[in-house]
Length: 269
Image (tube, rainbow, N blue to C red; front, top):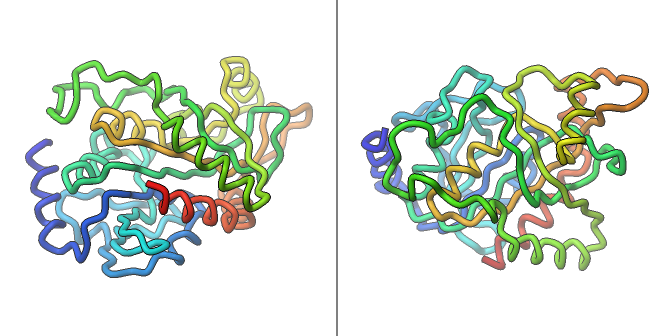
């Protein structure tokens, strides 16, 4: 695997028009931030050696090199998920490649279901911590020599970056929540009983991504900042059916606010 990581990194290095130290992973319905990037180069995942290909509706499937707010960035427009049938090593392969290309800071975003009764659909949640409820850890197996065998996860999401995000949100009058993100295997949405169980565990939101990428980023020593858009609510007295289309619509309605926070955040690192 490590040889493939280095091979892919070298292939990209020979084509990169800039040398970013910041990367962004854009999830479901969160493509507006990608539109704010001054694109210097866009490469479909299918053209990148050893890269998986995104199969989820709403995920464009391109690796972007460009500038956001005058800052050099790399952005994944669409990510890979365990439920698509990929291994955890494939899901997190791009993060490994980012490290080899010199990325120091990673911004992640996702759409999530709210388990916190104080949340509303359309809330923006700054992720303060995470719970891995997936069936596998992406570090399972032989240790890749980018980090220790047993990496510390006491600050999976950078406290410094969280504080900066709070300042930016306050400046723009954007309401933000703070909370713990729990990741499941998917692809089913959670039952009302599962929502209530996750809430009792201390989760404020639940989704099907992000956690593996953050684990690998921490293994590589990359600082992480993450945000969720709360697109549906679970565990309520009256169960509500959820569809992928509804999740996308809810995310699209508030993604300009997330894009504003993310764009200013990039300028601070």
